[in-house]
Amino acid sequence: MIYEDGYSFVKKCDCAKIRESNLNIDRSGLSKIFQQYKFENWKITNEANQRMFEVCREYVDKFDGESWLFIGGQVGSGKTHIATATLQELMKNSHVGVYKRWHEIVKELKIGMNTKDYQISMHELKTASLLYIDDFLKNATDSDMNIAFEIIQARVDGRKPTIITSELLLHKIRDEAVSSRIKQMCGDQYLIQIEDDIKKNFRLRNY
Image (tube, rainbow, N blue to C red; front, side, top):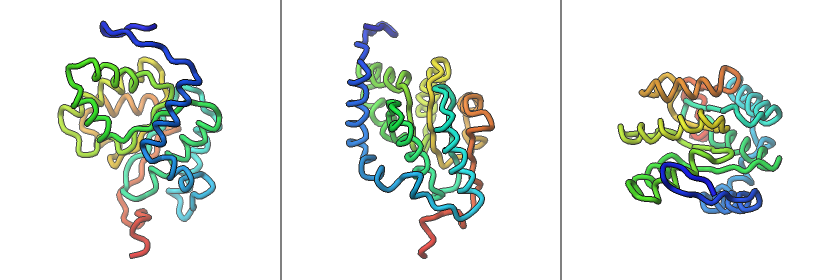
């Protein structure tokens, strides 16, 4: 039993965490795209996606249980593919991963605002052994930025590894308190930023 902000939480065993992680993947739809979004399915066609692969491969191979990975920028450049492949590889190595889309985080927390459900959901986001947030800060409001800061700060304090994809480049995140902490945890080594360039949008290649 652990306590936080006046609430008590039952500490789950590793096997329960793994089962819950697998259920979360099923609920999120990741079980299907896990079949498609793998390192071996990643096509290297330019310097940008070659670097994405190399950085993510290194993140897995040298995973230290603390460092973060941020992939931001150009829509359709394969951010979700390479980040999902990274999470999948880490989970193959027995790391328990939690996947969340940003809009789902915000919706869930706002529905439970000022209730115990909010505290429980926030606690899980803050303390997950490995958290992957997809589409971070997409269409974020001021209140969303407050939620983002609370999660990011807690994970920095706890040295919890975090994978983040976003359509925003780091310097375009309007809250410097959030962007600077992400930069701190990624360093230069695990920070991938794809400048806007329609040629890097894989989704438009057949049009």
